[in-house]
Image (cartoon, rainbow, N blue to C red; front, side):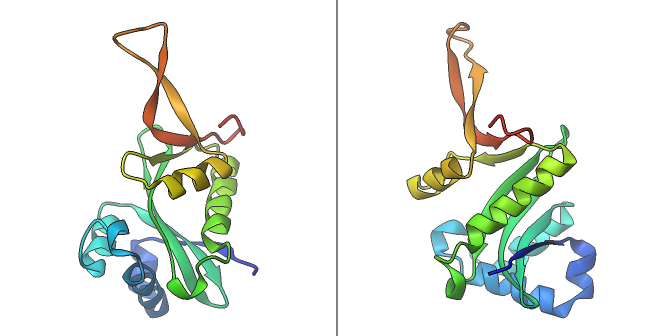
Length: 160
């Protein structure tokens, strides 16, 4: 399945009806425990209003999956709310989307980060397979012993 990467920002959201239809369908298909809000449209609009965007898996003029992206002050991309249309799950669309976002981050010299505090074990395993690693940070109680953070990171240079 030749999935490509497409970004949906506020301008694209407003300009393309099919993009609006597809992105809403992606998140309407999300399992309830994956959605931070009970209704999809306000969730999408809030992300876009806050200058975030969605990185989407594009195939045959349709969006099949999406992940919300927020740029941090250090230019890192924080990813959240990865979801794939129910009809195309278990076909590698989510993994391909994450790989494409990783490739783009590498080209741009960006780091990808994902908060892990609320992720199910299966998602953490997938992230590990994709090369995401916990980031060690100095502990204030034992400065010589690093502790792991509550997020994972994919380094653009492949050091993750």
